[in-house]
Image: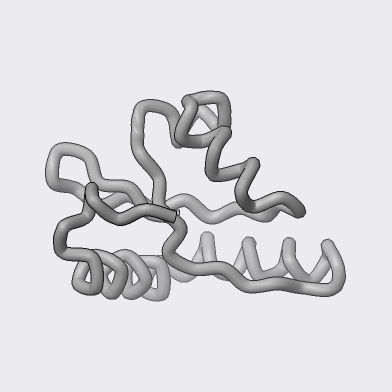
Length: 87
């Protein structure tokens, strides 16, 4: 997920089995502490048939700053009017 606050882009990587609920939790400031106070938009998702595979990908994405920056940048370029984008 990505967010924009004070002109700066933020990213959040996590796993869930209920994506819509997770996004709603983060946007209602009931998710992880890092996500509070920001409006989050889905920028990238991928499904896995096992939790262990999903956890490995989550770990890889969290460690790969270049890939996260690429996702944020491509999302921002596709959605120039960032705040009008809806899920």
